[in-house]
Length: 125
Image 1 (cartoon, helix red, strand yellow):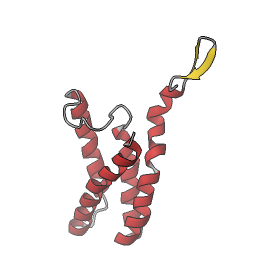
Image 2: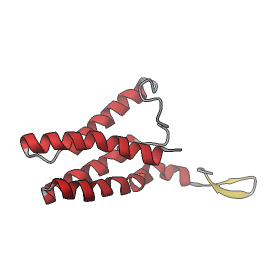
Image 3: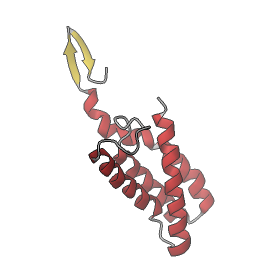
């Protein structure tokens, strides 16, 4: 029930730490994207190994590909602004707001129309 709030909050911690490291040491705004892609690879490994690792998240509702646009957004805000404060405020806000729309392509398959006992429903119902 808490996946829309738990996932972005826990994922932005990793992305912000990596972004701080890459920006401070190398002046490259690729930290959030790098961590998101590493989490994506880790999620694929986890799914392959039968959900052995992250069992407390409802994996069927949180798609790891949903984090990629959010990582791009955070890196783009840092690249364009060059400011930690602007990145924290605007990038963090965009990180949270992009979570739901970035899940739409993965959830679109459940909104197909179907008929059950004469009632028109979606597969999500």
